[in-house]
Image 1 (cartoon, rainbow, N blue to C red):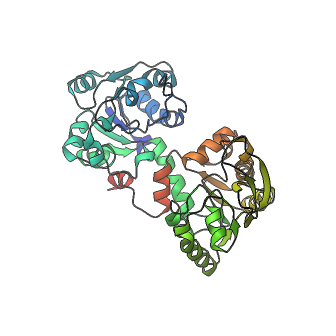
Image 2: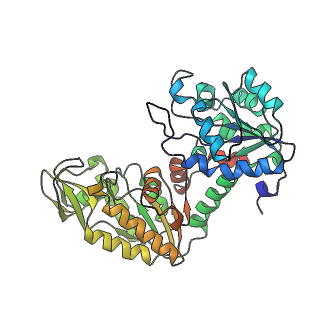
Image 3: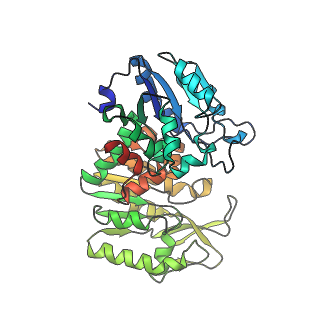
Length: 399
């Protein structure tokens, strides 16, 4: 059993750091994707079920100069109440002000308080100790359930834990699931282990690819970053996305992979377009021979088959990043094919971890969320974890 599950929250006020940084409609402030909110509901319900009360703190957006309406957590209150089955959610218009302290103090078992945006204070992102101490006075147990911010050394994620005794600071159920899933891929890997790395830029993924060279048997590279590798090998990529300053990096990664007997898979063919638009004219071409005036926006049919075969024989799968511009219907086939292959491999017994905003959006969009082993809520945090970095939000609890 976990530390969180073993703890009886009866009579306790649990101060929970959640990641409610959800996208809002710019006009109505309606939530357009509540994945991160839903992910932390089991943690909240366990505490309420024990007879404890809950104080939730989070950031939302990137407010620059103090409070602003579009970044207020008040927009989440109604939906949070619905997710909790109609439980009343109180709201404090500050996170450390008098109203916050009074409301927290008066909370009764079974009640929930949502604090205003932590980032309305610059001290939050600065990891200010005094600010963290003020937050800590709102509850008597600290629970970190915000894996999406675990890589930030902020006041509410890393600094605050020092103000709670060891037996009263812990991960929530979401955080436990994230950490155990990541560790399963990193430290309990069953071979063959395939890492699927997509997205636009090689520069964003250098460290994760280098770290995975120590563990993976196969690395599939798709998305815009594949064309930097193609050009590094002397291919002609037309107007495809390319980081010319990373050509040597790509060459070095391919050599390191060969030295370690790790098989790097690049897409043999691409769906190409004459402009970056949903209504572009499309065709297919070898990924290393794309005509001038055309750009690769998705992997081709051959590459889909090639990649799917690798995935289906895998026992461990990590997927971070799409294969193309899947938001446009004409260029979503490759990403959907990968999602299908990952789901089929999972059904056959593989452990699959999907992480990163675009990959998560893809499995949601194609209806595969329940057909992979674990869908991570933390994009940047998961990347840094696989890069081998110590995440401050995890270290603060484990100390």
